Image (cartoon, rainbow, N blue to C red; front, side, top):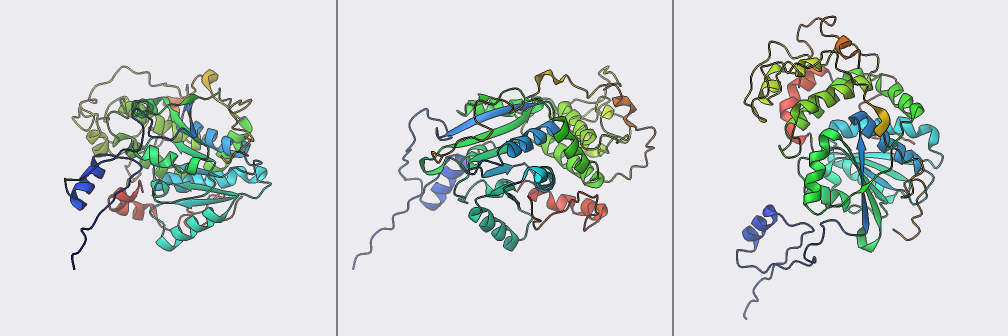
Length: 412
């Protein structure tokens, strides 16, 4: 009896060098490649409308995303997935969102979170519950970007950048499936715009969002929560800054702007805060931001150091910047969903459419913020934040000790 030769078929939604390498290892170099996508077509299906929302700060990106959710809570077809870049950001935003939508959650939407640091059984439960819940909101990291099918996802929201640009396609692909239409909205600051240009070079097209008008009441509500999370705020800011500075050069072209944005986020999370956040001199040197200018925004022990780190020599000399640098940016360019003719509010969808220590021995009076003076939810597993300023289940020292061990999992 003659045995038939095994035939192996490999299917992939996106094709990169890693996919070709995998094919060669499994199938061999003598394989036939078939591209079912028309030449020059975009990676994202044309059934998904992509919108770019430019914001003036990371905090405003959070605010704008939450406002979009609130504006759509009465839409019976609204079922969003919200992607953030790290597990800390996922946990924080998940709890912030739950707190913020409470007064508006008449239809009793439930929020879920999903990231790589949850136990597998918890992740399985969260996936199942969100999949079966027509009134579910999922806040997640890239663990949900591919390999999971959630029916009826109406919107994919992305806050900030991703280290792997190919994951943008996988994230957006959670909506607009099987010929149905969907919406994708990405919220980015000016510092993050080089990332958007890279996405455009890959064939992505974005619709410019209408102007965002800050909702003073919503901002006050958010800060009511965030002001009570002092320990977590500094941790979130540190992880975010490390994430920015370890991004590919083409995504972040001015590292000092990342330093400014991260510090600004902390002071918007805690409006009454006075002392500057701590940033390790070692990391600042390695990332090329151990400069006099960076010390306007973070407490970095020791003198400035000329660095040839990840981004080249950027430190060692004062740039003559004004120590009274202001974070009170011009608000004339703010954006809103008010009067949105693209259907962010009650859109008719009937056509189916995630280590550091503050023990630096510094004086809070010396390193104060004076230099800035001119300037539905049901509880889910994995929550670490309290709207009443509750404590965490493990100490900051444990966080410091485990920081390097967990670094590779922060973006899962």
